[in-house]
Amino acid sequence: MKHLGFSGEEILETIGMVRHEKLDIRTVTVGISLFDCVADDCATLCAAIRAKVTRVARDLTKVSAEIEREFGIPIVNNRIAVTPVSLIAGRCGPDEMIRIGETLDRAAHDLGIDFIGGFSAHVEKGMTAVDQALIAALPDTLAATKRVCASVNVGSTRAGLNMDAIGLMGRSVKDIAAATADQGSIGCAKLVVFCNAVEDNPFMAGAFHGASEADCVVNVGVSGPGVVLRAVEEAGDVDFGALTAVIRGTAFKITRAGELVGRAAAARLGLPFGIIDLSLAPTPAERDSVARILEAIGLDRVGTHGSTAALALLNDAVKKGGAMASSYVGGLSGAFIPLSEDAGMIEAAAKGTLTIDKLEAMTSVCSVGLDMIAVPGDTPAETLAAIMADEAAIGMINRKTTAVRIIPVVGKSVGDTVDFGGLLGHAPIIPVHAEASSRFVARGGRIPAPLQALIN
Image (cartoon, rainbow, N blue to C red):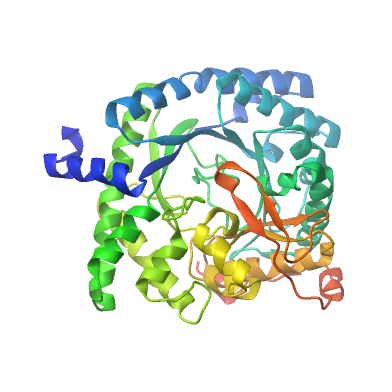
């Protein structure tokens, strides 16, 4: 630990955070480039993909278990992110894309990996034939696999919004929901629609290994809502300046613990260390909640007036504390607000305080976007696409990453609940606006990039 300058006091503090406030390493994610797997036929490509993934990540679960025992910090998930499949799939059609997805799933199974991300396409300015093939394959691929996660980037500040792709993704989400209807439409939980996607994100479902990344890299995602909640509670009724300093200092400590684990994992795997993503990613456990932090700041219940301002303070303080602690902070660092994975968010949505409109407003200042939102199964595809367009517009104009992970649960209506299990939690089915957006979505084409794009 000496190379990071850890003191005995810091080590004891970290042990206390693990024992009492549920500090954990949410994921150790190995990023793997697949560019050297490109082949003229799908069978050769699949064989090369499986060989490289299993070779590079063969010791990941073993190393994580060793570090967990030695350092006493829980590592919740082991994950792999690969080059976006559309970039390496050549002339593959939808059926061949499904074969690639199944190959990734088998490799993850063989390695004991929790999730493998990168069944992805980037279509912010236009779609190639291979992009369209991947999108067409999403329903069957996500229904046939357990560990594969997918993402599609439909917009950026530099390119604008590809409304043709957004319309297509609205229909795709409906098809995925139908294909996994017997599992609560859980396939939709494995798909993220992005604007301004980042290339070094270790968190699923949106992780992929970007084209500008090294051949292989280790990225770590650390989470600690419970740690921050306790710090805010202990701070008492201080003013916002003092409260920000408390959160910033707590984020600093969490980041240093995460980098310690990340560098140890990289060294033992013989791979370069990439980034530490400090994201307050909640779980269904009662105090492991971003909503409870916002309520400790002074809200009776998250979703009421002041929620967006409180979240802005939290997100900014977390980023500043992380940046102070490490030169390698990246990914999506900040606060996540996944509805189904946060006990406080679930409670507020069930009470009607937290609506989809308020969630959208809060995404303008949080790390990502509308995450794990369960809506009625009969929600039209055009409405889903319009929700994606709204969220992407926030990202495009504000030069930030935004995302939508929305689940139209087949057979469920407002007031029902759906249970996804594990870290995905459970969610009340919340209403969307009944008024149609179909004429808006049907226009197609591209919403042009904003003036902010002209930065050369």
